[in-house]
Image 1 (cartoon, protein in one colour):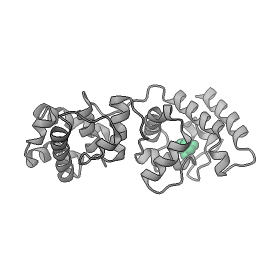
Image 2 (cartoon, rainbow, N blue to C red):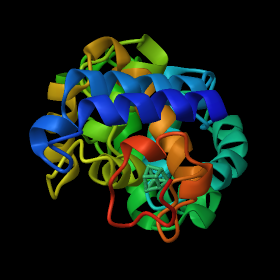
Image 3 (cartoon, rainbow, N blue to C red):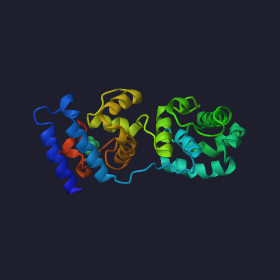
Image 4 (cartoon, rainbow, N blue to C red):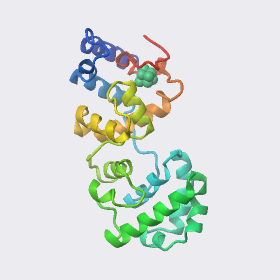
Length: 239
Ligand code: SF4
């Protein structure tokens, strides 16, 4: 981490000497490249933490992960998919049974309706298979852009957009990569500055960074290899 930090420091000095805090310096290609390099160095193997065996299972797990940890979702999905292994089976499930199975993930009534509705739509409209375009996935109940981007990126290797969850939203602001006040606005800003071939990795890496280092309440800036590139007001340590 020391070498990565030293490299980031050199780029930070070159990219933002006279314009520290300015939009131009923040979004300079050299600074963006340094941020991506630091993320690659810190999280070379970042992958989706939701256990799944198919695009359908990932879609359901992502719906269940709203306002809930991936660890908790991974506790409930094995039994859920054992009882209802296909979209057609889940479409016929009773809501009370689904609610019982996913209760511990929170907001279980809405989530049960969403996954049953998703199962119905995937069965009736898409022949039992999760579609492979963003425009189609967002027609599935419970699946907004974030869910669609997770499934497209992880299951199909397609980058039509960027996953913006609470971690990506927070860290995009802290790193001055985005200013928008909605996930969709932040996604559009990130799509303009992050090269498309990095969209999938970037989201996974930033989510890991948000869980491990750049945590919401008290970021561990002393342990962060992006620190020389970051001028967030929330910083708890300055090199
Ligand atoms: S320096 Fe601190 S606030 Fe900035 S990205 Fe790293 S952990 Fe987050």
